[in-house]
Length: 412
Image 1 (spheres, rainbow, N blue to C red):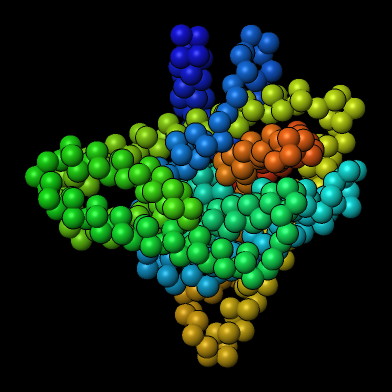
Image 2: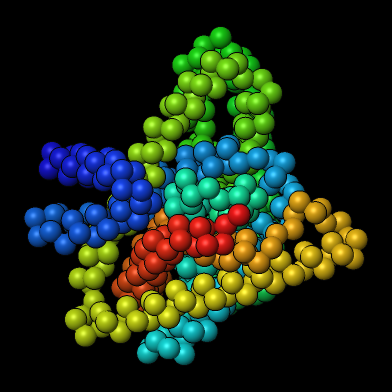
């Protein structure tokens, strides 16, 4: 009963804090993070051990589905070059960059462990990007690129993470096998999403006269799609994104206005609760991992986290501006680049600054194996988790608090 009371208390705090954040004109996720950290240090607050599998299943599918449902497929297609560059290429570049910094900076860090840390922190987060940038009046193109990148890059990060963890356990890394598995994971996720879009489309036509059944099916399918894809060991993230894009198109073409209005209201409430809860939980988790470290380690590891956060930001900045240059050069060379896909230096800076780490990095870090196959403890597990959560907090608080100023300064 005590656990239920704590959950209800957390939900109440989240709702009240969200309301105050709106009144104060401050980004809701930032306020919730701070509230979570503060109440996490309250002695009477019981420790909440987050199950990474529950986090991925409970939060990720509906939030990804909602983001994919509301993104413009036409704009997504127009900016696919930039989205794919940031969601795939940048993820692996960031993994390598963070790994190199961690290896040479942190005592005891081996190359496999450094790549594990790099993979955990390589992808920006859809929930963070959407939550922080909401209501800032960003240009539509910028929002499309940010959301599109965040919807796809989780799959890249998860594949990089799997191979990095395998290397720690002693399994040899083979480049062609890694590339093949990456393509299978992405392609399989796309196929699962496509099949379930067709299945859901048929079911909605069959139950077209029953509004409750239709809305309930649309609520259930993101979770079912994610589980089916993960069961076949392909990307549940990509499958849910494909489902969201497919259902968005179907909704525009065939759904009655009544169903659209009811569904939107229902989803708005769910997304509000889940979005708020995940940021509060991230804040709550920090005091717990802080207790796992020795007192002499805390400040040095906060310093490591700061350097890694700045490294990730610098790598992102270089790659985004490079992409801007490449698009402009391709357009001048009359290659297959639409003028609508181009963006300027101010947009590049906003895209750079909006790339924050969040729920996926948290879930992956907490999901690190406790022990290796031979029974020995996973090396530097507590240290990696602490650095990961510290980087997430520095990213969300540092960039989140300053993003309104950046948008005002560089926005159009």
